[in-house]
Image (tube, rainbow, N blue to C red; front, side, top):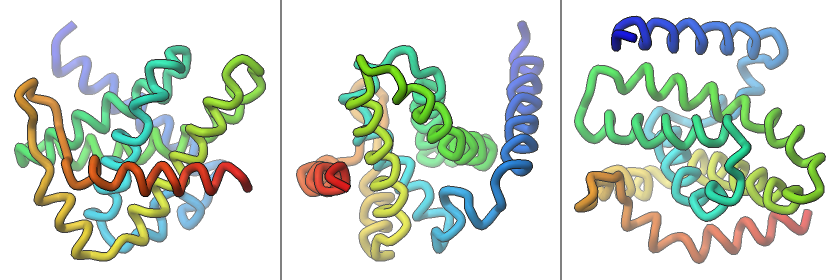
Amino acid sequence: MGKDIQKEMRKQMFDKMEADLQKSCKPEERMFALHPDEDHIIVSHALFLMMSKPLAGKLPGLKGLFLLRKFEEEMLTAYLTESDEFPELLRYCNLLYDMLPYELAAAARNAAIASKVRKLQVIGMVAAGYGGDMEDDTVDDILDDMDFDRNNKVCIHVIELMMPQLNQLVEREKIY
C-alpha cells in the first residue's frame, strides 16, 4: 500500500473518530479544552508518554494506548524536526487521548488488569492536568530540553527528573 493511500486512510479514520466524539462530547469537555496553548498540550502528551511507559508493556491488549503512545512519539519527533506533519499528528494524539478513557473504562472490568488500568487512568489525568496547569517557564524548559537520544528516540531529561514527583501525584490521586 502506498504511503499516500495509507495517510489518506488514517486521516479518514481520525475524521470519523472526531465526528463520533463530537456527538458524545462537547468541545469544552474535551481533555485539553482548558489548556492555555498548544505548548501545554504538547507537554501533557510528553508527560503521558514518559509516565505510561512502565505500564504500556504490561497492557499489550490496549490498542488505543499502543496507538496513542506511537502517535505521541511521532508527534514529538515531528515537533523537534519541525515537520509539516506536526499539526496533523498533534490532532491525532488529542483525539486518541480523548478516546482513551472509554477504552480504559471497558478494560477496567477485567479483574486481572484492573489495578494497572486504574493507575493508567490516573496517569492520564495527572499528565493532562499537570501539563495544563504548569507554569509557562517550566513548559518552555521542557520543550527546550526535548531532544533525541543515541537510539533516535525522543528523550526529555527535565521530565525524567520530575518523575519521582509525578509518581507521588499519581499515588496520591489513586487514593481518591
